[in-house]
Length: 199
Image 1 (tube, one colour):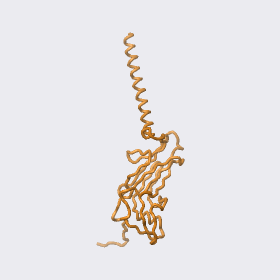
Image 2 (image 1 turned 90 degrees about the vertical axis):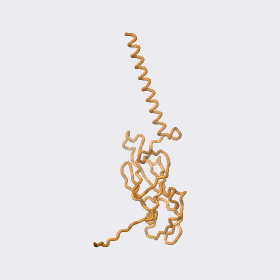
Image 3 (image 1 turned 60 degrees about the horizontal axis):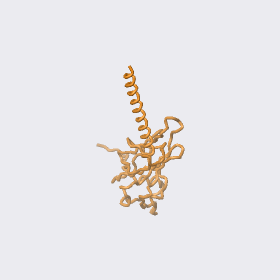
Image 4 (image 1 turned 135 degrees about the horizontal axis):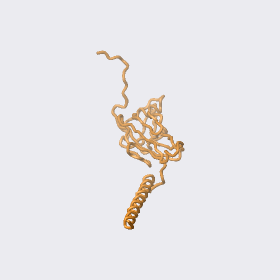
């Protein structure tokens, strides 16, 4: 009987030990994830795009006709409080990808136009938002609605991020910047005629 109890006690101790180790590993993995491999502060606010979680500033995304950017906004402890929800977004030019354009024949700098969020079509949900494609011409036309805007596409670097979307937490304490560029298109805009086509 003593041997059976001793074996049962050892098995129980081994199981408890394994559980403790697994819990420690899980906690370590949790903190490693939300501190970017223990290289930064613990993140309580982050975003994701598809299967990719984004905890710090990034870039290199492409906004195309058939590839809108959908960004999910997440809070580490959001499930614990209904008050921990919401977000704000702003789209601004990438200062490192500047070019000149004309507004009523006067030269302007792309990097100087500031907040251009209104120039984009954005569908917002409670925990996510989607940015739809637009052309650079359309962006500048919307920024200067009552003027004639002329751009030379040869002056634009379509291989570098042209815009940055800044996603800010509900309380304004945290933000993540995501750089993206517009896919270059020979046809910036298609205008359909209202004339009736007869066959």
